[in-house]
Image (tube, rainbow, N blue to C red):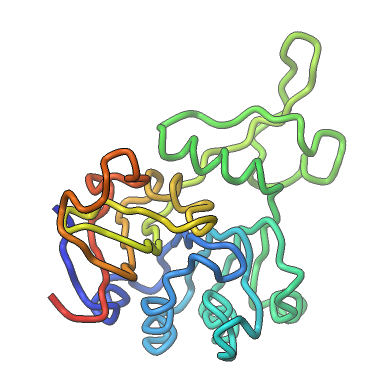
Length: 228
């Protein structure tokens, strides 16, 4: 059963130098409360694996929406992402030499995470063949299968996955609302420690079995506004 803790306690579990998978798409589906606590702590030299770097201003009207807080604070030393164009600070920090960016095609990245969680040796994809993607660190080799050329992409794993669930029950089972599930479903399988931030906590059984998207067996901690 997942242990229930506060966002502050959750952030304190993550040490300097950790690698973290962040669920969410442009901040939607980010674990905002835990990320805010990480920003306060100033935890540094983090490796971020995320669809994107969010954006300076989000729908909450706050500066630096979601994971953008950590980029702004220069807490991220390396970023694996599929696009970063809406956060100009990424390019700025790259030019300064304070942030390393690894861009991966979106479909390839989610498959690499799935492979990491499933214990597979990698992913074969034709995406990026004949382009500069071939020289990326995440490409293990170029492989020919039945006359077609593929890139063998390495699996992706992390020390932590930081997710956000709309409804989480007392056993840690998660239901995501709408598209907030995006990368979170596979990230929950590919990290050593999974922390899920809950918008609402319900009793076990209140989420219909067929509506459970991430099983509580994968979730180590649930972060709620109240401690305990």
